[in-house]
Structure formats: structure tokens, C-alpha cells
Length: 163
Image (cartoon, rainbow, N blue to C red; front, top):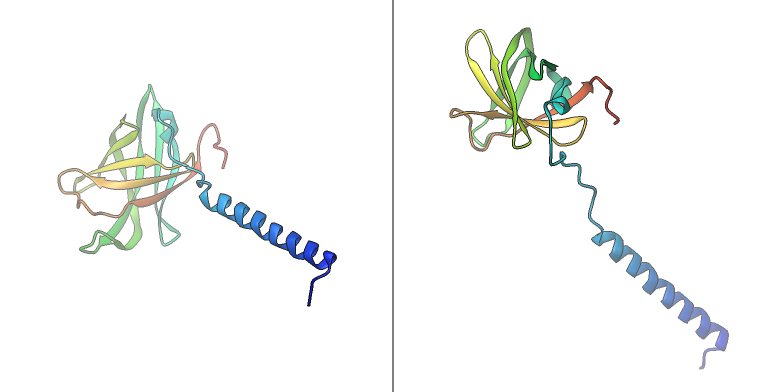
């Protein structure tokens, strides 16, 4: 049994289409995803705004960072967090009141923050992951090396940030 010229042409066309589609899919799979890392040069102004601290997609604290006389400062609403031995956050909730940010400085693209609560001084390191998101980590000698970062979402800035 032999194939007609039309059948051979249709089979060849289908085969060619399959090869083209395979090549396109392979190209798509090899295309790198967009990188939303913070810019190489970060200024204090990039951190200014209202940041929500998130746990399980819910806000449990709010940090307001402002810039006055080229110096960062602000406040953080009181919060409580628990962490397991692996450094994973297992609980977080807001508490009444707020604390003052007594020191904040940008170095090597990260913001070092000192928060003064009624009981202690807490050290944090904030790293921008986009213009509206960041990660906050416990810093200082008492910080667990494997601590999971807190996800931050910027909800306000002056001037407004494009999302």
C-alpha cells in the first residue's frame, strides 16, 4: 500500500510543525524569568513609606519609614512572633502600641534598623526585592542564623510607587 503525494505532504507538514513547536517550547523553557532584585544602588529614599509585615498573607504589624534631614526614622506597631528550631515563623500577631526606630542606615544595599521597644532594642536588616516588596530579617548577635525572613509589602510612599 503506498501513500499518495497529498498524504505524504500532509504527514511532512505535520512533522515539520511538531519540530517547530518543540523548538519554541524548548526556547521558552530556557528563557530566564524576570529578576525583581533591588537595584545595585539603593538610597534611603527607596525605603521610605508604609510597610506591612506579612504572615500567612495577613498583616500583623506596620512599619512607617520617613526621611527627615537625609536621616531615616519611623515607627513599628508592636507585634509578637514565634519561631521553631528550624527558624521558621510559626505564629505572628499584632499587639497594642508601637515602638520607635532609633537608628536606620543604608549600607551595601540593605537597611539596618534599630527598634527600641519598652523592653529591649531589636536589630533588623531590610532588603528590597522590588519597589513594593522587601524581606526583613532579625539581625545582631542574638539572631538565629537560619531565621526565615518576614515578607514586607509597601502600601504607601511619597511619591507613589508603580506596582
